Length: 447
Image (tube, rainbow, N blue to C red; front, side, top):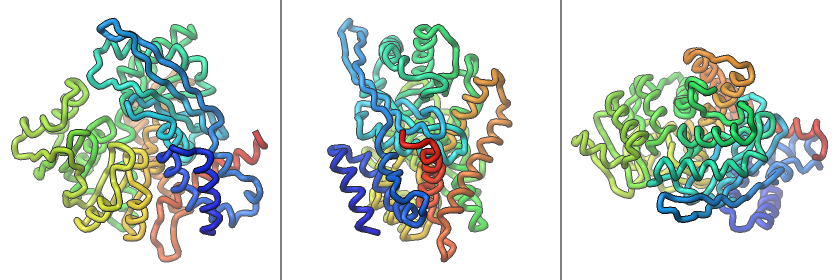
């Protein structure tokens, strides 16, 4: 079996050289799914996983725009339409200087499994640009978004490809993108999710990824007769996902003690309560400030420059920042400090070695494709509301989100429960997502 896995990964490496993030995502899936494929006659000789790792379509385009100085700037735009076997492509747009094909292909590949896990009819895609919104004026961001959409619009649609936000793409950017799409197509449709409430958005959508990550952690704890109440929680990041993971964990009785950004992390031993979180939201969302400013407002807290929060003692860790933020050394440090729950709010925040470390220790460890699926699940609910021209209440959407996260958890148990009773959520998530997509691909023929 090891030789089969190696042969497959070597083939993917040969075809996708210089794409480390994508290769990492494929390897993580292959080592759990290939043994399952070998045990199921229905998939023999169909090369399903090989077909899954090849995008159905890769779109790359030039994005010229004019900055406030009158200079013409050129960025690259991308859309990876990975798999549409179970529905229109669905996945976010990321604006960040590190964006390249490798990162977007990894995100799109993960999205295929994540969307399948939600049980909603959504395929997988991802896109974005190497544009950096940090430090840009609203006018510059508007002009960039309008130029970006002037090409992207011809490749997307409510029944074809429905983008959303991601790192660097929040409500402001979605608004500018949607406005340009509406003008170019002369139609008002649910082609983007994460929209404002007054023009087709859904309640709970901003909170959904962070809330869902905490709900999944709670579901895992319940398998051991435990609860997140009273637990010490470390959170990385301080953007949308981290903010609402902090909010929901606090509401459920946990004490969140860290937040971070690219400059370092803050440690507040007393806990980041609702008032302190409100300050963080104002600092990050409105003032576009840095997390180190937190210690000026709350001097009892400490700021650790250029460090990650994984050295702080905790029961639960919620990595909500970026891919590969937890390496094997970080994983060992977390375990040494008593952490026994890791629920990933970011996409692939743990390296393969880190994930293996968590699994070997038999802690409660949920990969992002399962734990952070609440965001795209609620995007799917937004699509439904747009199609039906209705709006559900906050309570209705939150209840649907809870149920979806519970269903994802149950599907992970179905395929991930080992003979000794330990639940391998990585294997469970990968196989559950694979089965749904693979069966649809088989039914639709070689296309």
